[in-house]
Image 1 (cartoon, rainbow, N blue to C red):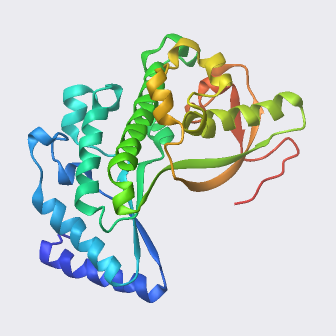
Image 2 (cartoon, rainbow, N blue to C red):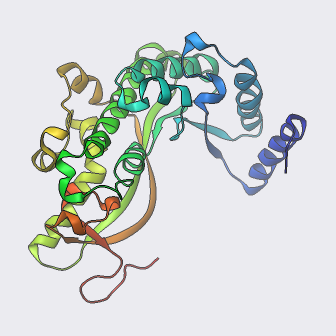
Length: 296
């Protein structure tokens, strides 16, 4: 069904009222980069209607009803023009455009928004687009396959984008606006498939590849050592300056928790699903060696 602007304007107010009736005290939503800066760059112009109609009104309505807005700056999607013109997050230059976009949001909404999430599930964004689409590649050739390198390049640039925007907020806006800035990760709990040492190690290794891939740089300035060892030269290096702005760049960590899985060691990359990451040498299972499940 087609929904007109007038209908939407009425319905978002109704939605907020329903949230209030439910006793909800906070509401997390994402701002569409394409909606406020259509081509992704300030040079291309700002969509004032998108700024005002979709977000200013919603934020004000939430606050008027005692509901705290939690705003995500990038939830996977970004302007198509950036992908077509520069290759999206494969290109380091996108960091500047993400910074410009974020600064616009801080200036526009920061007087009311006190909780900012720079990125939603950056690891998943990289995996879905560049690792899990490898069905037409030979997994045994992953070390030399372009896409197996791109997945790490994309996450690298996403992390630098996060750190750059966090530094901007903390240095220019935080003291005045009194807000916090963080990041949201996707998470699964990994349990060893058996008591064998290789399965115990595999569960820890996959945790490093999924949780540590994003969080280690934010606390220690670099990727987990096991990733450096197994991924090798395909894993990008941070500069000294990048390491410094990464460390301590998050006031909070949002966790999108879905489910738990068993993990077993698998040395043969051709037998590892792309979703488990070939480089981790680990496979997830719903049942363990005894046929038991972790539940739903």
